[in-house]
Length: 229
Image (cartoon, rainbow, N blue to C red; front, side, top):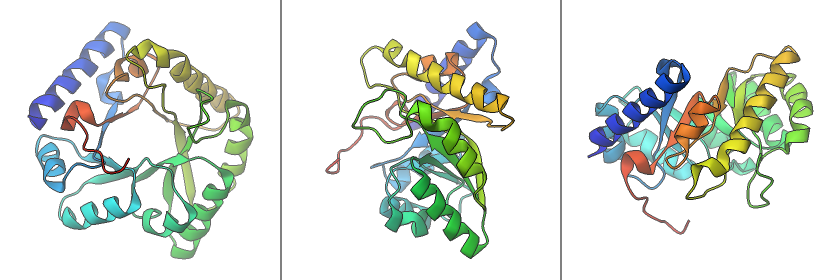
C-alpha cells in the first residue's frame, strides 16, 4: 500500500510539473512519519524515499535509533522548544520550524559548542492564524538579516503551513506570499533555495506556487493515528 501511495504522489507531482513546465526533480518529498511506526518508515524507504520528518523530539529519537543502519535524511518540522534543542540540533538534516530569533540563537549556540552546522528554514505564519507559529510576513526580512549573522546556522529557505481546508485553493495566497518573500530576500543578496510548503491535501497548489519541499503524511502512510494530538 505504501509503495503504491508513493507512486501516486510521484505521478501527481509529475503531472502538475508538466502543466507548468517545472522539472519534478526540483521537488523533494519529505514523508511525515508522525505517529507512524518505524516499520512503515522502512517500507517507504524500501520504496525509494529517503527523507522523513518528525514533529516531536522523543518520537524522532526512538525512530532514529531503530532505523540507524539506514541512510535516512531526517527532518524536524514541529515547534521546537528550548529544552529540546539538544536532542534535535546536529541530529537532523534540516529543521523546518525556526519560528523565533530566540530559538535560532539557541540552536546556533548549541551547534557552536558542539562544532556542527545545522541547516534550517525560517517558518512564516502566512495565514495570520493565532494557532500557528512563525514570523509575521512583515518581520521576515529583519529576521533573515539577524539569522544570517548567527554562527553554525545555515539558513536555506522558508517554510509555511497553509490553511487546512477541503479546498486546496484556500492555501494558494499563502504559498504565493512565501514565494514572494523568498524572491524579495534574494533581491537583498541572500540566496535561499528552498520553499517548504504543501501537504497531502494541497501539495499540487504548492508546486504551482514554487514549492521545492513537500511535507506529505497521510497521502503516503494513510490515516494518521491520533496520540493525544
